[in-house]
Amino acid sequence: MTFFIKTFGCQMNVNDSEKMRHLLVQRGLAPAADEEHADLLIINSCTVRARPQEKIFSYAGRFGRGRKVILAGCVAQVEKEAALARKARVDYVVGTHQVHRIGEIAGEILAGGRPGLEVGFSRRWQELVPAAGARSSAVTGFVPVMEGCDNFCSYCIVPFTRGREKHRPLAAILREAEGLAAAGYKEIVLLGQNVNHWRDPGSGEGFPGLLRRLSRLGVPWIRFITSYPGYHEPELVAAVAECRAIARHIHFPAQSGSTRVLRRMNRAYTREGYLRIVAAFRTAVPGMKFSSDFIVGFPGESERDFRLTLSLLERVEYESVFSFVYSPRPRTRAAAWKTDVPAATAKARLAELQVTQAAIQLRNNLRLVGAEIDVLVCEPHPRQAGEMIGRSESYRVVNFASRTPAGAFTRVRITGAGPHSLRGEEIIVPHA
Ligand code: SAH
Ligand code: SF4
Ligand code: F3S
Image (cartoon, rainbow, N blue to C red; front, side, top):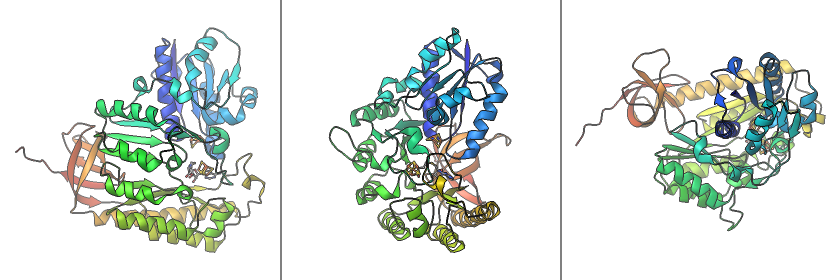
C-alpha cells in the first residue's frame, strides 16, 4: 500500500507532514511518487484565507477519486463533520492535534474501515511522535516549541485551528535540538504561532533563555518563527546581541502601519511601540534584519492608514514581506464587520505595497554589492549548470557558480543585485 502527502500552509504543517510520513512508513506503507500512484492521499490543509481553503477542496475533488483520502490539518480541525459531508469525498478527518494517530487511522481505512473523524485537542501529542526519524532535510531541522494562540486577532482563524497556547517542556525541546546538533544540522528553526511567548511549563524559563541554551549546541544558525510583537520582551534583544548563533534576522509581523487599524485588528501594540522594538534591535545588534506580514483592505482601512503601512515599510526597510488582501474568516470577530474597502481598492493597495517593497529590496541588495557574506548552499540551480542557489543569514537568495555541495557553508562576494536575489562569486578559502 502506498501514500502521498500533499502539504498546504505554513512550516508547522510542513513539520506535521514530516511526522505523518514517518508514522506511515513505520506502519509499513510506502511513499508514492505522486498522488496518481497512491492508494492513500493525505491532504494537510490550511484555512488561513478563503482562497487556500478553496484550493484544498478542488484538489481533493481532482485527486480523491479511486483512492482513500484523509483530510488533515487546519481545514480538518475547523470543518470537522462538515468536511465529510462535502461533495469532495473525504474518508477521514484528522485534526491538528491528532497527527500521532495517523498510522492507526490509515491502517483502518485502508482495511475498509468506516469514515470518521478525530479532532480533539491534546496538550502532549508532540511528545508522542519520535521526531528523530521524521526529518525530510539533513540541513534544516524544525523544532516546534509551542502551538496554538490566545490572541484572537479579529481577522484570524488560527486560534480555532490550533487551539489555545500549549508550550512544550524545555527538556523535550533540548533533547530534540541536541539530536539535530549531533547529526550535523546547520540550521534549527523553532516553530510556533507565538514562539516568543514560550515558557517552560516546569521552571518558567522564558524564550530568550531557551535561545541562549540552543546557541551553545554548535548549530550555526538558530531561527524562530513567528514572533508576536505584542509579546516582546527586551531580554530577547540582549540574547540575539550576545549569541552569534542566533540568526540576526527576525520575522516580526506588523500586519499594518496604522495604530488605528492595529487596534481594530486586536493587535496588542502600536506603530510607535513596534518601531521602538525595531530601534532597540538595531542599536544592540549590528546588521539586524526584519521581515513581516501585512494585510491590506482590512475593514475600516482608510487611504491614510494604508499610507502609514507604506511608510512603515520604508522606515524598517524589511528584507522581505508577505502581503495579503484581507479575507473574512468564519468565527472571527471581523467577519461580522462590513468589508467597506472595495475589492478593486484592496487589490490596488496590495500591488502598490508589493511594488514599494520590491524597490526597498533592490535598494537593500544593491548596498551589498562588493560585500563578502556567509551563504548556506541549498540546491543546484534548476536551469543553470554549475550554478548553486544559497541563502544568506537574512534569507536573501544568492546565485553563484560553485562545486560546494548543498548543505555546506561557503563565502561569497556579491557582484550583482536584483529585487529578489543576489549574484556572487564564491571565495575559495586557501588551506593554511
Ligand atoms: N501567528 C502569526 C500569523 C500566522 S497566519 C502572527 O501572529 O504573525 C500568517 C499570516 O496570514 C498572518 O501574519 C497574516 O498576515 C495573514 N492572515 C491571517 N489571517 C488573515 C486573513 N483573514 N486575511 C488575510 N490575511 C490573513
Ligand atoms: Fe492569528 Fe493573531 Fe494568533 Fe497570529 S497572533 S496566529 S495573527 S490570532
Ligand atoms: Fe494555515 Fe494552519 Fe498554518 S491555517 S498558516 S496551516 S496554522
